[in-house]
Length: 96
Image (cartoon, rainbow, N blue to C red; front, side, top):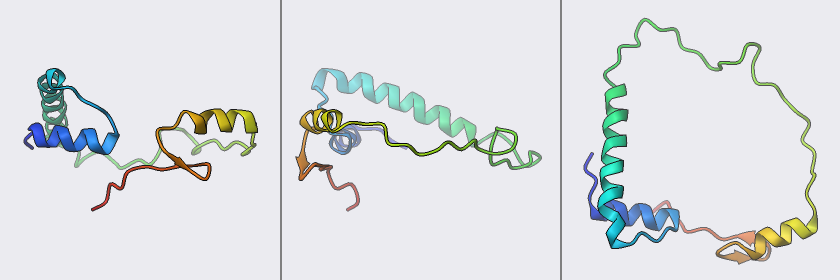
């Protein structure tokens, strides 16, 4: 996979981050290292390893889903969101 300026620009748009021109080269190099590391994982032979679905014996522990927020906290979070509409977060479309 090639990491170029257009890839960085697209990632910046999708993540709603502003990346200045001075940082692009460092970010490109970091992403190249990450992609190379992940590609190395593809070379590991795992054919003799049995597939697992969880690392926790007995499965995932469950907890009761209890609302513990307040209207004041919710409003504080909404007030600091980059874009909202009718108390919902508005995010950029990522599927073209």
